Each structure stands twice: as structure tokens, then as C-alpha cells.
Length: 235
Image (cartoon, rainbow, N blue to C red):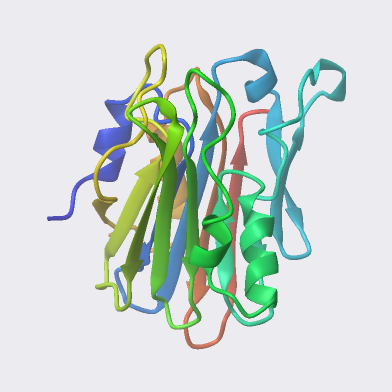
């Protein structure tokens, strides 16, 4: 059953980083959304900026950046094959390189684990959108907080229904340590008619103190035209 993702986000002060993939209500576009949040000054000191093949994170104020590991990366990369990769870390490049070598995204992610940031052991979440609009989602996380075991989950959606998306995030909510996302991706209503509308709804639903940046893109499935919106709290 489809859920109201904006209502879920309003009720959750810290889902961390989140990926939403799906199909537009008029069935013409693949839909991607990715957001980042932060609790520390270092995590909040970021913006999204466009690149030739997608987006990257960068420090808003370079003088305040204390540790770039785990927070500076390319969340979105578009490939010449028509695939689009979206992740919450440098596994974007791991997937890109594996695909270039003729492997699949599963092969790439079997080489990776959750982030080395104990005691949270933040999950690595990843998505791949196919030219026809189908998509894959995955999460790599510790076994109930035990870093000796990495659990890898893969979810594949061949023909998504119009107006439906699937959402996955790093955390269930705030806490210490932060509780990892659990269960299947959330089936979400995607009735927003275009990228600006979805971006507005998602941005306004994220916790004001913790939200940092948001990327939304509608990909026209017939022509490949991109309709992209980026929101940054800074700048």
C-alpha cells in the first residue's frame, strides 16, 4: 500500500540520508530524489552542486571542513548506457566502475560494507535507475549493530506502477546510536506532477534543523529529457 512519504518525513526528525525512486503519476518519467541531513557542524556544512554526469557534495565553507571522509562524494552519476546511479557514499563510483567492466550493481556492492563510523555503522544505501524506468534499491548494514556481520539486501522493481515510488533511508529515526533502516523500502505515493512540486513537498517535510540538501530529477522516458531541482540550505 502506498504511503504519504511527506507525512512520514514530517514525523521523523532524522531519517539521515534518503533515496526515493519511482514513476511519475502520468507514467512518462522516471523519478529520483535524494536528500542528506546532518547533526554535526561538519555534516551540515555541505551543498549539492552539479557535475557533467550528475551531482557531488562539497563543503559550503571550506574553512569549517574538519573531515571530508564519508561526506564528500558523488551521490548521482549518469552513465552513457542510460543508467543513473544514486547512493549515499563513494559506492556510486564502485557501481559505476563495475558496470563499465560488464558486471552488475550486486557484484559491485558485494565488495562494500556499511560505513566505518561505529557505533552507528551507517548503512550504505544505493539505487540504479534503468532507461525503461525500472529500478533497483539496496542497503548494506550491520547485523543489529554488530560490525562483524554485514547484511546485504537487494530490491528490484521491473515495471513500477504510475504514481508509485519506493523510499529507503539510512536510519529509522534519531537516537544514540542511530537505528538503521529496517524492512523493505517504503511504497510511496508519487502524485507530484513535476520535479519542482516534489522538491517543494519533500524539502518542506524535512526537519528544519537537520536538513542540508535535496536533489530531485524527473527523466522523460521517451526523450531522455532531464528536469532537475536542487535545494541547498546554504547558499
